[in-house]
Image (cartoon, rainbow, N blue to C red):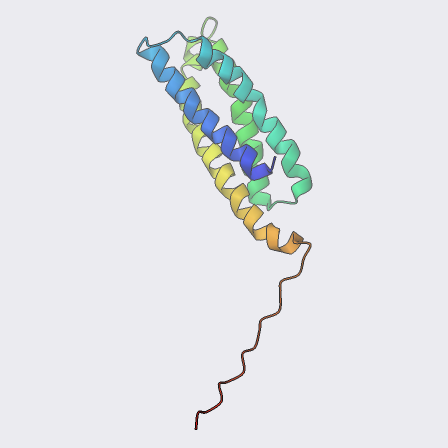
Length: 139
């Protein structure tokens, strides 16, 4: 799987996570699916970061991925703090906004970098342009 594909998959996971929160909030489902997906999404950016290291990405993209990783790891911990520190746990939806934005930015940046790097890594050279001779004048 490519780095950009993993980033987009994570972004889609964040959107599904928000939907599951809405389903729990409006009592369409219990919070189990939201909780379980949240714990899984919390560690996914570590894999994205591991894929990014050998990819030689631009510094800004690496920092976005590092930020995404930190925010994603903190996210389920904020929810888990609701019994001991409810004020801290109240930051869970605020952190989700940062998570959404960073996931979007990482997906966009990794896609742009993949497009930039792909021609340089192409194993076959581009075909030379064909020169078409001018047409002969008709008599």
